[in-house]
Image 1 (cartoon, rainbow, N blue to C red):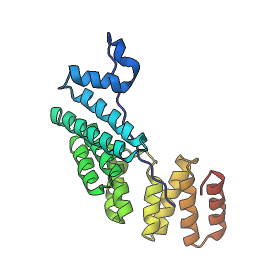
Image 2 (spheres, helix red, strand yellow):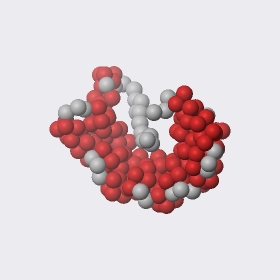
Image 3 (cartoon, helix red, strand yellow):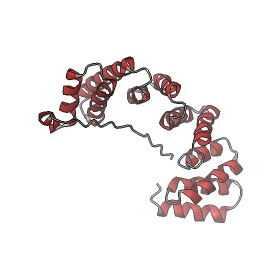
Length: 219
């Protein structure tokens, strides 16, 4: 099994002399859009509140309606401020929630157009392509992350998994080793290391790494 994490973006606005609307963020940002309809940040903040409501709703119609409103306000915020990276990224998040990975890629790429170093967008595109089985394309986006963030080892489990899938076990082992060294509490690194060492013929070490994977809560 492979566990992928999806990162999220939050936005907070602080103002004065508006105590009545501080009862909750939704009321605050709704009031903010009413008083400042041309504020990209305020529209984006309200969009995020609708997205959060959609994500937490158990009612399909409520979920649909809240995603629709969220999308509307993210689009408005991007219209006001075309360089608003977070708006494009969150439009991609909504597309993923609605099972439209192709549209999600379009939005994530738009986010990268405004900020080529935006890690969340690169990661999300890589995961989509990985799940589609387009491993080389996924690798290209992971390599972009490594280029911009050479000291970030959070993507090593994905690197290792891809190389395991491609049956390039030496490369898979290399990334799993680096992952263990720099993120020793991540069980996925040990699972990938177990798989790589097993395929390379070292069943004893594979068993040790597998046990460590289980000890850390792997399933």
